[in-house]
Length: 155
Length: 306
Image: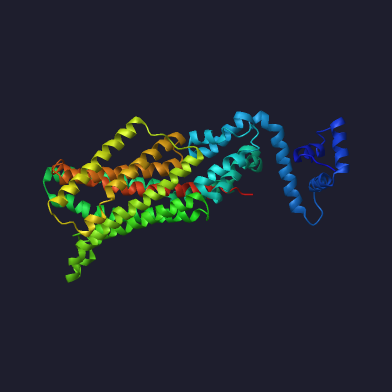
């Protein structure tokens, strides 16, 4: 029985050959014994295959997204997409709505990698802007400041 | 790239057309500039008709326009919140308050006024009803409107508290509250003296008695909102509630100006300066929901192209 599943980032790295040696061996062992992770990994491998198959567009989209995640992951430290740098970027996105001081206060409890952004910021934004507007703003913040997919799309 | 630029232009156009906060402020500013020129012309030429016409026609139309704009945006904001969201109830009350403001303004500035804008002046005997329309308008635009606004802003302040952004009143705020509190007490004393002297009260007078205490409540809320906005920063949300605070303070100044004029503390022609307060106050109540609507609309406008 597998209690801890592999992170999607690790699976992407494994697929791209960025994880090697003992760690790769352990992950492969885990995949052999974990139906959930192996299913995710198979889908991941499937999405990397170009052309053919009935779901070609979906696979291509997934491949693009995974590529973005990988690029983000490797570049985020260099680009300031972590820690205080990341928070500053997010604050710039939120400031037009809640003001600079409000944005800073909202982001203070958020972890450096932004993983708890949604659970920390969203409830407070919902109070003032409502669910509909907040979901769009948070999506935008994640897109632009965390994943940076817009830049990648345009390039 | 062209597509992105086009989308950006469309988003900006949507933002400006559907928000209109800049336009509202520009109109109010233009009105004040023209008002100063008319005031100067009136004092130099000595023709009372100029200043009277300025307030009776463009002034009245602008008050109706701003109260209509305030109602429109309040309605949009109210409906943009989902059922069960805490701000929905607050904006429901603010919308009702805006509806009372529009109704009262129409009755006072159009149907209850002696002006060319009043259709009743062309309707023979019906024109005698004008004072009744005016009195009804004063009650609706006074007690009814302020009670609902105070209830709505109370809910807003509770949300500020829950979010951890509720500001604290400073010593100067307490001093302002004490000063206006003394004014309310003085007004109450005047009412008691009038009652003891046997002068009759009309129904409108009685219904309007809570206006000044309500304005004191609104002032305390406005100051609390202003301090909260200072703490949070002037984003769209801050501008929205800051504008409400500004509108309340302007209404209060207008109210004090009326009192000072009635009791001879503000002699003619300087008492006319008090008339200029009402349009900026109406503009503040119009621009407040416009700011909130712009915040919500801009979220729509930046919807990511997935």
